[in-house]
Image (cartoon, rainbow, N blue to C red):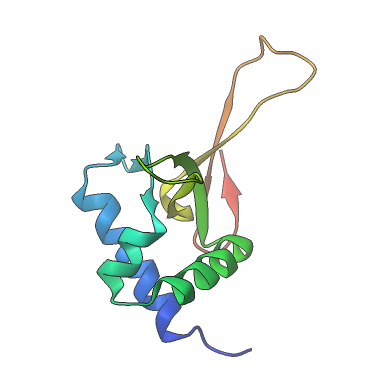
Length: 114
């Protein structure tokens, strides 16, 4: 398997630093994400290359799209992303809406524990 590229490593580090700098971590869990444009600027990577890398990182499970925002004057919503190890995923029981929500944390090795 090929090693990860420099762009991917730089973006991963930028997402980690920006989420921590902006105070988006509560008890070690990301409550909001960072736009791709900000992470690309922090990592000194072109925006087009960053979009492609973020798409690949999301597909690989390294990043999670936490929410989205619409900037003033923008046509489209932009996604807010955080590193997958800092995000808790919620799995609700579809048959019983009154059931408790199960919180799961993704491990760096890909495993999940409750």
